[in-house]
Length: 580
Image 1 (cartoon, rainbow, N blue to C red):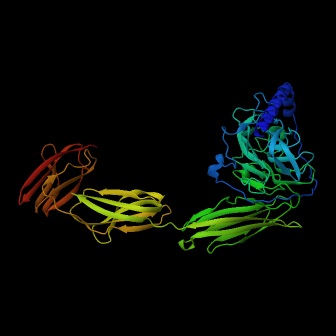
Image 2 (cartoon, rainbow, N blue to C red):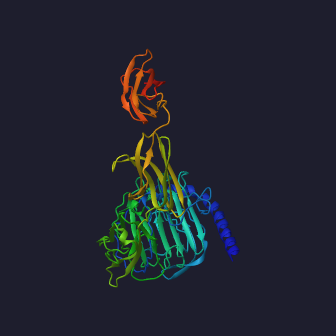
């Protein structure tokens, strides 16, 4: 069956390409007529009766940073098929073109009428009985065509900067993507990316029961030149919605004619196109009746919150029928969560919550939107909030080892949860802790991990160490080394090379003496003149470090000399280079 369907589809597309060649000769005349079109805005609108029945199970929305990739059906040029169009010189780029009739491998139900084929029209819509080349969008309801319109406007893909239209079948759904498309007359300074998905209502990807999804990437224009547009805006507004074709039944999210994010509702012709950025609307258009409120921006999956972190969410229900108002309510609100509800054409919920570790667990909160129709319709969306309190890092060992003046700390973890880093702190006196270094953690892991840090060049004395384990959310706890670390006395005299060398203007000179004695440490210039005395006095056995600041001295070679007088005498001289 799949092979037969593929052959039929290839035949239909090939036949469409033959028609395309016959139409090429008429394209120039058509372009001239269209460019001379004078758009006359309507002076009034007749009242209409509105029917329909839409069940919204869920709607997903991605954050602004993901706008290039936030279409509901992920788009790529490898698994999708470029859609052949009429009025095209290369088979794809066109103005006002359409595909041939494409067979659907499922039943699409639009207000009770079953369709088994679809026409993909370049101007942002799908039809089911014939192609639609109309470039100036009209408001719904209208006759005689059944239309599903994610963004009915004058799309023009002839400019090479513009993308084209693509489609993809996945199981029992068809997705169509207008990828970065321009507008008439061959403009590409602004581009729109949007998507339409239709199914038989049995695909859980849309939410069971839903059979239409509109999905948007970055939306930058609304109107072509021949529809009264100026720089891509104003003139005839773009239409978003579905139309049964009988002049009665329809659903709309509104009409859009300007930049910005303003949204006045479905009955407004002056909505801002950026309101659609990165939004996904899924609904059921199979039956007739009052249209239920349309959910917006509710998360599709669990909302995971780390205890101590503040969660902010903004959701809503839109009224898809003219003159209707939607009111909201919420149940299952856990302690500490605040939900501010604003009723109107769009009912909004502003959610704020900072749960504690004592609230770890799962909470089901249900949001309801009910319209004010004579026979009201309610849409309910339930959201699972999952609160996690990160377990402290489980330390399996923490040890120290001494090598001369260096202390190496080794520690191991059995498990880690949300572990950002370990900060190493040292104290030589009680409760006087100094941070001396940091080692990155391994986030969340159930596997053992080992860590090490070396504290170098310590003077003789007793030291304590501890680890400050820090979570990604800023929480921390301490792990103390159980033993005190002792840096003992050296077994020989030694004068070390200064570090850094060359230096500017500060360097460190370290030395060790195995027994008490009178110590002198001096710096001399090239002539042998003493320029600085750094140490002059009695010192006990141990390791010592002295800083030398060469500010005020000229660049050049200097010598430093250590003299110790005591049980044994010791003299040593080293050279260093000051470079400014």
